[in-house]
Length: 382
Image (cartoon, rainbow, N blue to C red; front, side, top):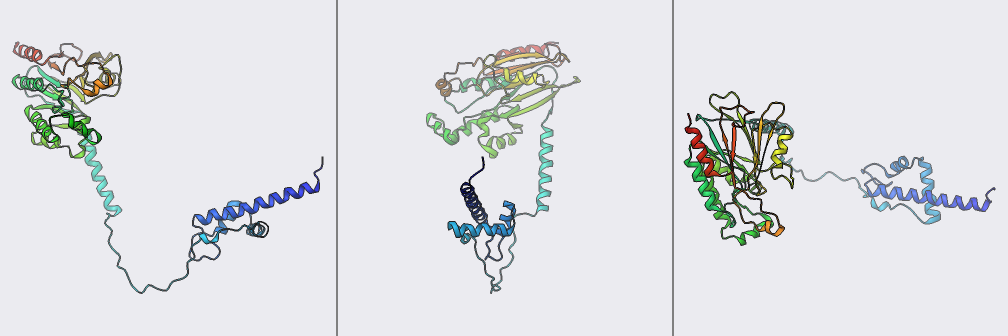
C-alpha cells in the first residue's frame, strides 16, 4: 500500500526537526567542553569543525540544519558558553621564572633506582636469614604467643615466669610472634578507658619485655604495626641488638657439625582458617610448598599443632599456633568465641644430630618448665 503524500510530509517535518535539534545539541555539548564558537579567537578547536566530524556531515549541511532550527523552531546554540578572547597588549611588567620545589625527572630516576636497590637488597637478605648457633648440642626455642602486656586480661605473672625460665636454661632461646601490647589507635583508643594501664605506661612494659630476653626472633603483630613507620619497638630492639621484623621472619639455624640448617618460618599469622583445625594456617603453608622444619604463628589466641611429612624428601614439618597470655578477652566474650587457649607458649627442642626425616630432630612440648627440664636432661646426655 502506497503512503499518502500528507503522511510523507509529516515524516519529513519530523526528520527535519530531529536533524535541527541534533545539530544544536551537538554544538552545545562541544561548547560546554571548551570548543570555540565562531566569534572567539585564541581558543581551542572550532566547535563547528568538531560538529561536522562528529555528525559525519558537511559544513554546509550543518549550517543548513542550524538555519532550520532557528527559523522554524527558535533554537540555536548557546554561543555565550564560549569565552571570547581579544588580543592584549604586552604586559607592562615582567615576572621572574621561579625555581620549582620538585626535583627534576633525572634526579627522581637516580633516587628511585637507589631506593629500589636498597629495598631489593633488604628483601633478599630477609628471604632466609642465616643464624649461627654458637653452642654445641640440642637447643630449644620457646615460641611465646601474643603477650598484650598492658591488657588487664593478660597473665603477666606467667609471662614473667616463662621469661625467667628461658634466661635460666642453657640452650633455650626466646621468640615472640607479635602483639606485644594493645596499642589501641583510632576509634579503638576508647578501650584505654577500660584499662588501668595508660598508653604511656604500656610502652614502659613493652621496653621491659623487649630488654628482658635475647630474642631469637621478635615480630610485630597487627597491634604493633598500628604504630606505623615510626614504631618505637623498632628503636628499642635496635638499641638492644635484636632483630625485630614486621609480620614475619624466616631463619636458617646453622649448627656446629650439621651439614644442613634447620629452618624456622615464624609469622604473626599464616593465611587460611578452618573451624576444624586451629593449626590450619601454618599447616596449609607446608602443603602449599614451604619446606621448613618449624612454622609458628599466633594472632588468633588459640592453640594448635600439626606435623606433616614431605613424601618426596621425608622432611618433617611442625605447624604450631600459640595462643598467648591474654586469657580474658572482652571481644571474644562479646562474639561468643570458644576458649581455645590451651597453652600460651610452645617449645620446639632441636637435636641437630638427627636427620630431617627423623622425628627425634624436633620435639614439641607445650609447657615451658617441662621443656626446660627435658632440654637440660637432653644436653647432659653423653
